Structures are given as structure tokens and as C-alpha cells.
Amino acid sequence: MSLDRFFSILKNGAWHSVDELSEEVGLTARKLTELSRFLSDRGLITYEDKTERIRIKPVWKLLLPEGNQPQERKATLATFIIPPKSSIQVQSTQISNLSGVEMEVSLRIDSKIREVAVKV
Image 1 (cartoon, helix red, strand yellow):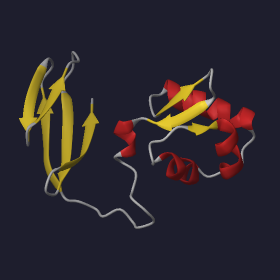
Image 2 (cartoon, one colour):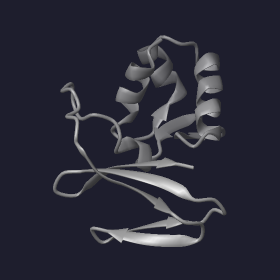
Image 3 (tube, one colour):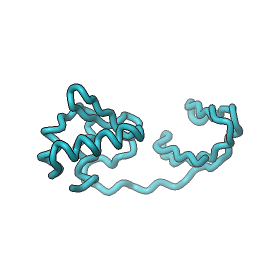
Image 4 (tube, one colour):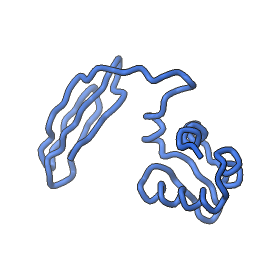
């Protein structure tokens, strides 16, 4: 079983059934259900227990490379600290720290924001 294969199937953002995916990734439906619940609990995918369907959360889909091409590395434009209960705006995008601790944010950018990494 390859997690790369699992996420490459999910990156289209569509719903996939456990049965369909289990054949494609080489796991039993039971094992795939366990994995899906685990990843869903951690906010990476959405797993519907009743319908046994899986799809990637849209925010994580943006981090997956397109096609079979290697992902181009982008230079870090900025790293900054956002104090607790504060916000900043970068390229018409507001980044808010709603927590009670300061947050370190690094941005990778080309013509628009492509990646945001957060370290608390």
C-alpha cells in the first residue's frame, strides 16, 4: 500500500467509495476504513461512515503536486510571527492567529500565495 497512490487518487477532490479505493491501493476494505477514520480524525480527509465514501479536504488538495511532474520548489518570500489574537494581510489574503500563543508563518509564493506553513 502506498500513501502516494492513495492521495494521488484523492487529489481530484471527488468522493470515492471504500470498495473502489481498496482495490486501487491494495488494502482490504476494513483496513482502508480504519486508515480513513484515522486520517479523517486528523483533518486530512473527509470520511462518511454511513456511505463509506472518502474525499480529500480541499485545503490539503492544494498541497498535492499536479500530474506526474515533480513539484517545483519555490523560494521562501517571508517568515514572520503573528502575535496571539492578531491578523495580517498578504496579497488580499488575511491570516489570523486566533490562538493564545504566537504563531510563526512562512510563505512560499510566485504570482500568488501558493503555500502557507504554520509553526506554533
